[in-house]
Length: 145
Image 1 (spheres, rainbow, N blue to C red):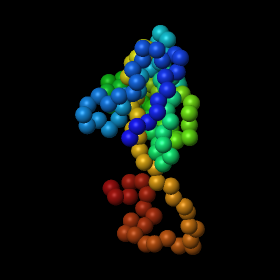
Image 2: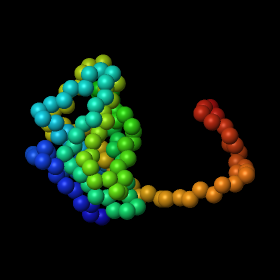
Image 3: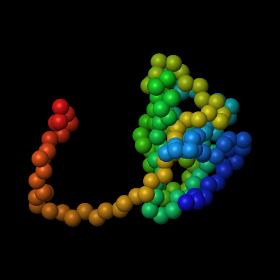
């Protein structure tokens, strides 16, 4: 499937999203900051990527954390996963949260998150008086031990 992508003026010399291995599910997203951005411990900021995309109807993009940043520095995407709808044409931004103890310095072109494209199933709710029974029933958080 081909998806249209547009470079924004501040994305010169920034790589387009790309898969980093043959079987990767997500494409890396890159920071289009100039020259750098600092996210202090406990803070979050919107990091620009310098791209806009045009997803086909019936698809979404999810922006997720990179495991290496999460493990090594405590960095996550605040609204994980961030959703890009098929009708959105603005810049893809990543809300990074610094859960770590050190300030995070993001340099131009750093890999900051990953983006996964998924098909979306749209549903229609049918209001009923009762739901079907299951073994679990209404058991919630920690229900299964």
